[in-house]
Length: 124
Image (cartoon, rainbow, N blue to C red; front, side):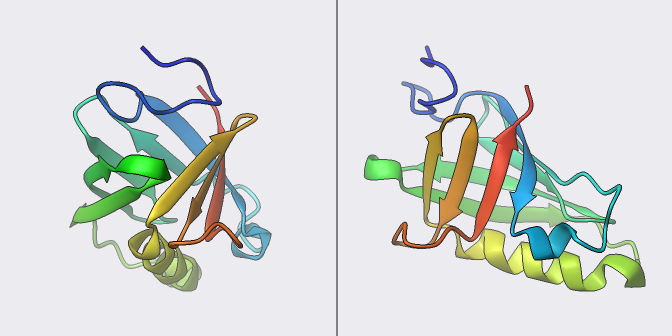
């Protein structure tokens, strides 16, 4: 079983969990009431809100905090007001290769942890 917010690794992978995007703040600045969530399921599947649309797919964990998000389905609603946000968020999710969870925050990064691409706060 999972040992709490600070440890997401378990025998089965990421625990079922829900996270809310908090950084980069510039993505959220013009979207006051928008809540962007990232969810990991027990079945090695994930889903993410991207603004107007959503994306889903599979995730795979490796050693030393490695994480691969394999994008699958994407809804295709036309929403000009969130287009830039969605393209940026999808691009960053595609670049994720590592994760670190500590103090209730999930930091998603490329191969190094120098600057996270995205930071989520646990909400469940």
